[in-house]
Length: 131
Length: 137
Image 1 (cartoon, chains in turn brown, blue):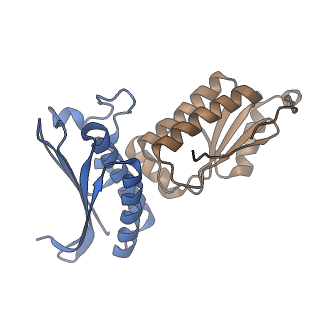
Image 2 (cartoon, helix red, strand yellow):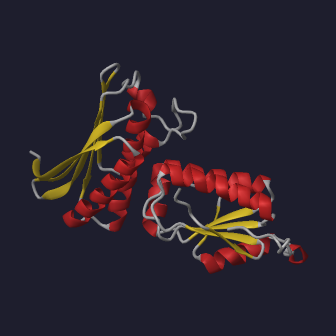
Image 3 (spheres, rainbow over the protein chains, first blue to last red):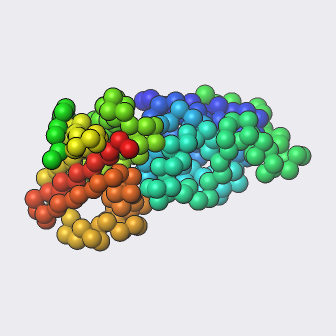
């Protein structure tokens, strides 16, 4: 089964969506991410959608789900790299992605995530490995 | 009068068919001279409409046409299914209304906002046809 890799960067998880997500892949990503947040105790999830050319209401709902579920597990979600045309389209579609943090790029997204966690809290159990 | 300068049709049965259609729309829209924002809006509207078709009718057919009217050129998309039809189209066109618990109810009203022209004809028990046009501005 095709999978979107989830990378670990310290206390954060990084996902780069390089293909236009079809439904099955998006639902798998949602499940994998939440599972990984739970297993690793990650404090933040960064989703890079700079290569995504469209976000429809299904995809928007998935992003909202990921943010909501992560928040319940005490992790913040930041969506980064949205193309301007996608932002314009989302607003006209009626999907303002409320409750989802956004940043212009990965670097700014990481800054945003770092700001949300106290400095002495950045250590997570680093002996944990996953694919 | 609308003149059709190119036309292609595809059957939509799976998510992959939708993905293929979106790629074709992008290519034809770019060829017609639509800008990035118009292309993105049209593809997003198409994604919503094709997804509706799969969910409610299981399958359907799409038409992708390059059209012109006077000096205007644009893209017309038509989605035809023989599903259950929509009993109350006005209600279905309202934001947030849906009969699918997994949906946000933005598909039809959202798609209408993303294109220049939008028409829907639905007959209960016969099916639904949605036509949208994006003009090159």
